[in-house]
Length: 194
Ligand code: 5GP
Image 1: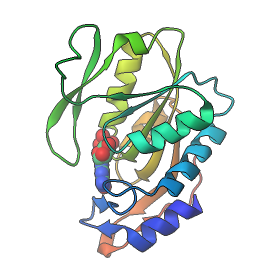
Image 2: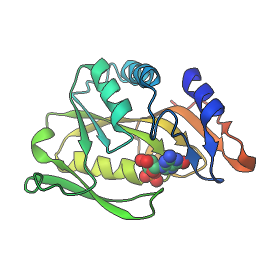
Image 3: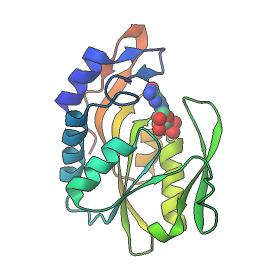
Image 4: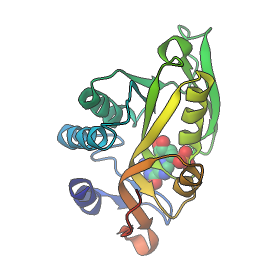
């Protein structure tokens, strides 16, 4: 998606060979117009997949996910990273090791929000080693619902998550695929993955 790639080139900060900072439009300050366009793009790609729910993980997945849900005209649910006092029984839970925080979180969704009749689109901001995606898939599996695919804003194609998910037959659609962050530079993958 050209609009996103341009934004990454103009505003992204390469923190290391593996970490990209995009806090001017996605991870802290958010660009609502870009979020809306990304939501439209996800909705168009998954238009015929019979999606009934969009699922993401707090916090940076929420904006692209709500926009995708808006355009698909379905509800959006975000998995919580900490148990809240009001969220105790009836939970779907999975453990996720956070790439950026280097700590393990338990993520959870109230089981009343996903049922076996649901076809779920999972959305997240970044795809690195796939931990968040696999954790979210686990929650959907616990609900006996179906995963239609995964929509990612920025996939770091030099890390293993995308490969592992696609090898398992998961339809992963990334709006921007970064092939390298070496030499302080963002390089995009040129090959198309459908
Ligand atoms: P994974 O679970 O695929 O290993 O990592 C994805 C999660 O880690 C995303 O939810 C995102 O929050 C965070 N993440 C991974 N890599 C990056 C990165 O390069 N920059 C930022 N800002 N977040 C990242």
